[in-house]
Picture (cartoon, rainbow, N blue to C red):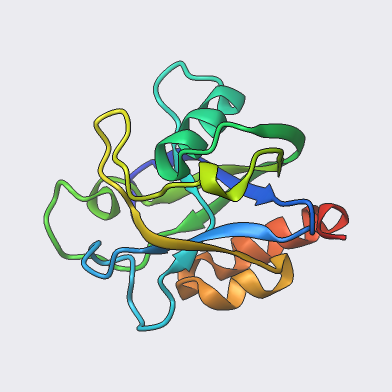
Length: 165
């Protein structure tokens, strides 16, 4: 078991008017996180900067990863931890620096139009993480992500089920 710390992180369940959530397909060459073909999908998420409030981080990460800014707060989870899979690659990758992630998931209602969503444009000096996106039923998303994230996605789906209706 690693003695490394958990990386503070926010996860975003962005719901459209039909109760579906936005998911993005990670670039196929995005490193060790894609460990099985077909499991490149995930909801937006990202690290919390030092001294950053998680609610501020959620809006920043949503914009950085999707371009979306039209969103209203619906709710959030308690902190949830998960461990990264074993890793023996470059020491600069977060898998080498952190044991896993300590996440707080946020449910947001998207109030804009789909043309606001643009995951391919880099923002804040961050490279694009997704090569495409779509709306998906919340209860199906856990089956589309890498296995080490599935339980966290199931927990978020249970916590936010009321927003998916």
